[in-house]
Length: 101
Image 1 (cartoon, rainbow, N blue to C red):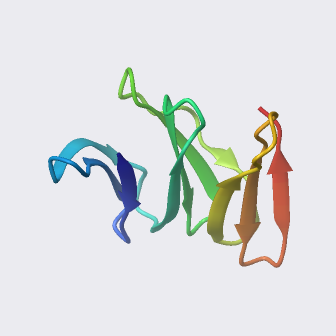
Image 2 (tube, helix red, strand yellow):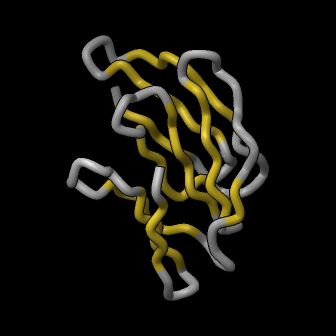
């Protein structure tokens, strides 16, 4: 699976073997700049133009409450490769943050 985001706030989860859309999430009116699965693939995490993180539950298809993460657009997301797997966000406000699970 891969996840994609669009400038209209629509995020899609794709089955790359079948070249088929599995699920679609709407994260609002702002651009979805980056999207990533958590380590368990239970959640899709989206960073947007407003500096907000949005989490979507893949099992229930529900949106979790937004988290205001930065003062400007979130440009990238990644997980630390160690066993704790902290989420790292990078922003246009010239900062990055490390989020513990």
